[in-house]
Length: 155
Image (cartoon, rainbow, N blue to C red; front, top):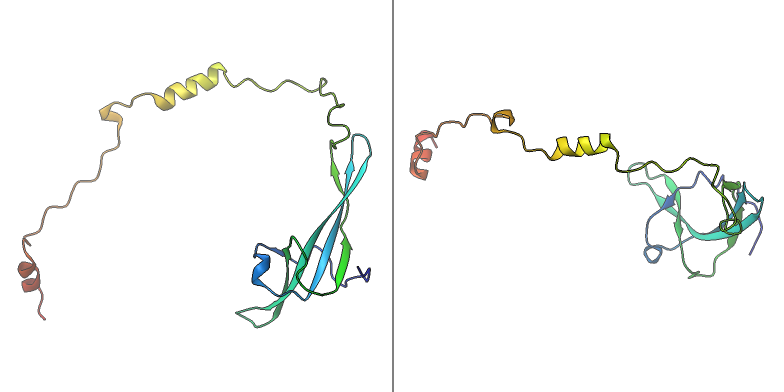
């Protein structure tokens, strides 16, 4: 793996949802992610490989770069690593079983009187007089057959 810096901001190359079998990449880029737990301070690293593709725009014929997530490397191409800014999580795998949320308020109850009244109004039968009226139907024309229709027009 080469650690040459790329001259691109990792956030400027869009990640596409194309399938990896439908393209021939120009290189591979590995995004190196860093997650910091705000609860215990543990730092976790993980990576995600992408194939970088250079396509041409149909409208302007300008080159467009985009990344496609891959599961394995298919070709002998250069591999670049790109460190992304760290992201922060409130709870990691180490402190998930140890963290106490007793200082937090309890979850709201689903069955409140206001909610039950709303449901009762929603499912109440509406009387016929309250239902919206449909627009009046247009009267049938004097056309009873196709011949009557053709006779109305001069061909």
